Image 1 (spheres, rainbow, N blue to C red):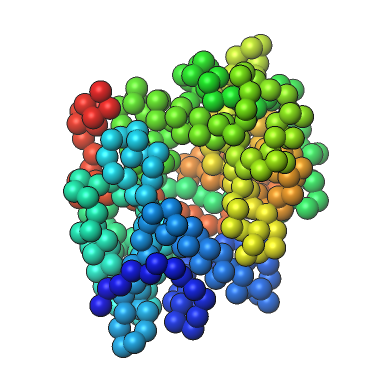
Image 2: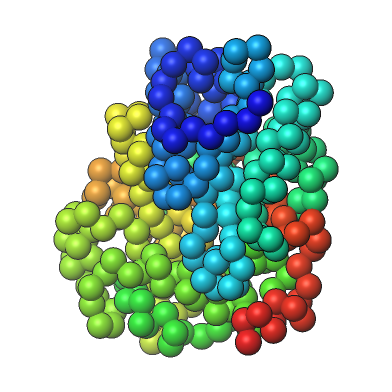
Length: 354
């Protein structure tokens, strides 16, 4: 039996289901005695998705909630691709692995059945969650991206001792994003999920528009000072884009945001560094380290205790340098995409974007 949850409340039925969640974020920073805070965080995320126009669909069996699939509309992807786009934010089921896979398969198929025709759907799963990965693949999803999730506790300021080249770092205004060199946007395909196999010219525009949403809260006309950016963020802005500059040229960018529901659930703030990229000819020269230090400084000034960093799994050199700054691996994720059960066609997507 399927049903939709208009709201999600903490109760015994949901507690049993949440206990099956394979990835317990930030448990290392909480301690076992506060493991319930992770459940509260997951529930907050589910409520956020529902309030944004998503659906929390449950599977009931023998009077219990045996499975849950939460889907959230991706408005940026919908606007960029002119295709209805969604993200599966949570996929849970109880029982043995074969039972879990069956329930998840049913939930996914029921979810896809109720979406508009030719919708694009993206899911990000912990690498260890084999039942979800297998269920998604059996429904026509394909892997687009594998990433490492790194984390760091910011309470001791130890990153300040890490050497870094003396590049100027400044926040960016949304309008300025169109002006920097194309080479700095060397972002791997699949980072956003639905960007896989997009033509290069389309991919560049998509990434620029995505970065523009991060820069949007900064109300300036060009590049503003660090002090002004910090004051702006303290008034409620929770995302930003910073650039490393060498002789007037932007040679690296970092996009960061805070996670508003983490503070309520955990009692401390969490910040996420979603994109950290450097122009190819500047790699190995300390640009990424300089940007990362600036991002951590901004987080620390705004009361963030834990910083999270997503790194492409093939980027071993960079991962090692981040670990030298005190980051450590807390998980590995797979991003999977569904486009009508078929892999995207480059020519078709190019025509869609015009």
